[in-house]
Image 1 (cartoon, rainbow, N blue to C red):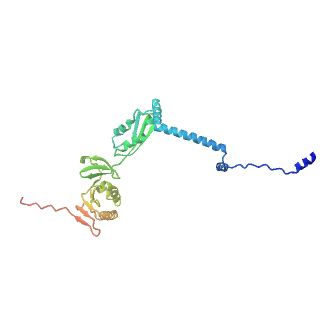
Image 2: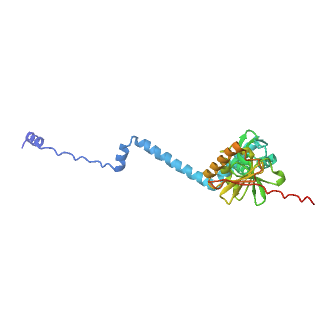
Image 3: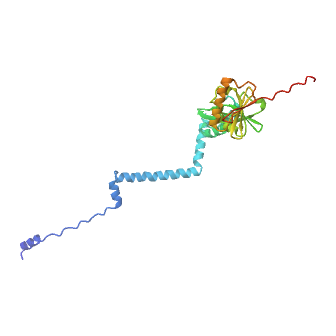
Length: 291
């Protein structure tokens, strides 16, 4: 067989196709391709995440070992040495309470760095005083603490088991006083009567003409009020806020028409919704003309 023929036969044989290798795509790769970021960006994010975890761990170790507190103290001391120390205290809003007590509490922070002043602690100590309703403390750089006091307003005297106390409109006891120190305020008497002062105040609102004449009130049996007037009479009101308000309003109308107060009646009793009872003072015994 000639060379030419062999070449033709060889050329006529079909060539075997090369096998292509199929690349397996992992689930991780599929997720990366689906994400709107490149693989390089993901790797960069993971790197920064590891750095963040390392920093957080280092901070936690420093915190629990006390390093952070020491650093803070040193920084505060440096600030104090630079002139930012508590040297002055300005107090406003003080009227009835002892101003020296406010200075005493606040000046416990004296000669300390302004950064180390515990504002919340100072306020807590001030609020322990019954007269102080609220206190606001602020720093005025470089060396001043400003204390703004809001005082409670005494509106009545509470008498309980012989003890006298000034109270505010919420019934909060402000200060114990003696009988000689009683101011020109109504006196309420009875166990837990201070907690019912708001109710009494609302009750008197229904009869504004009578309010200035009321010098005191007694909380009876934890159920109802007896009112006392400057002309010497006592008015017994029924139980229940609405019933007592209606009775007091009716009494105010009758007093406006007939002038019930100041006419010598000792006691008015309106506990019965059907009728009112009056009690007159006992008549003085006639003197024996022979004596």
